[in-house]
Amino acid sequence: MNILQIHNKIPYPPKDGGSIAVFNFTKGFAENGHNVDILAFNTKKHFINIDSFKNKIHKNIQIIGLNINTDLNPIKALKNLLFSKLPYNAERFISEEFKTKLIKLLKAKKYDIVQIEGLYLMPYIQTLKMYSHAKIAFRAHNIEHEIWEQTLKQEKSFLKKIYLKIIAKRMRKFEVSYINEYDFLIPITQRDANIFNKLGNNKKTLVSPTGVDASKYKGKKQKFEKIKLFHLGSLDWTPNQEGIIWFLENVWKELIKTYPNLTFSIAGRNAPDWLIYKLKEYKNIIYLGEIDDAIKFMQEHNVMLVPLLSGSGMRIKIIEGMAAGNIILSTSKGAEGIHGKKNKDFIIANTKDEFINSIASITNKKIPLKEISFNAQQFILNNFDNFTISERLIEFYKNNY
Image 1: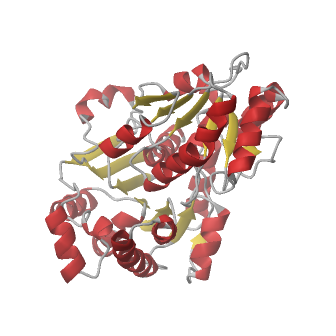
Image 2: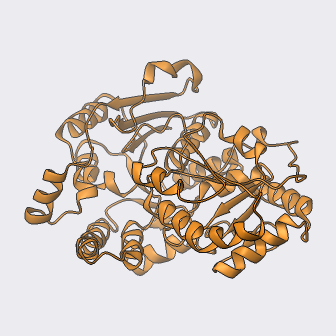
């Protein structure tokens, strides 16, 4: 099959959750013998030199990037607020240059499947229908309007709440407007699939989570002589920022009084200056920024904290952390879509006291850490192998073509 994926940023190297969600399927499709093209915005914020990795990716993969500036602009944001009905986050990715390149690709090559990666590329669906006979799959990474509604609930500033209320309302309308415009719906979790169905989806659907390359993790064991807490995720994503600050303010301040030698390492790309400055207010926080090797980092630490309060979809870093044998301590929200067993495959905490008690139990070795680590790793290797998940999606496409 010839497959085209379109995305709002270059998904290589796959370091953050969004890029991993896209490129793992790209890799899986290619390894299953299919030809895959990716057309993506090569944004200033996430700029990638494509020539630097051409020899590192599968021969069946071609990545085409367009250097288009999608940076947040206060003047454009104000114009959007006053004169547009679209959410600004979506409007930033509506580009005539991108549309022109897309048309050129569709005219030059016959695609069997076009997989739209995320809501923000859905405005190009009419172009796809006009210039191609390919089946169109909407790969829903999140329920976008839900994230904004949850962020609105957490916001304390009166003025920001007014703005977020407008954005959340527009985002919901924008998201709902594309229901059933696609041929296939490919959500990451069953929960997201259920929400789309309630919104009116009646197209054929396959819940298809993001997997991991099982070969990278087999045989690796985690050590727990010294407890090393860490968080790994995109630090420009609002739910991650929100969860980290909540944890530091409500849990860490209290916890560090009892365990003064405990440290908490925070790693991730694109942390805003205000967050980096904020982290300096708390004791024993090690801010590392973007790291080169996520697997190595996870093996050097052993307890992943995911204090997520909002968001949808699936936390891909949890999948990777479990595969690496880390103990995962997450909120129920963070663990959505994984379906492991509480206190067997991971540990769930939703309140301040639950986090404090869980970390205390981990630190004092009052729970079977090696057993949970082994269970987590086996659960992921048995249920989230990327090759198998990609193969299943290809079969779904073939059976419904």
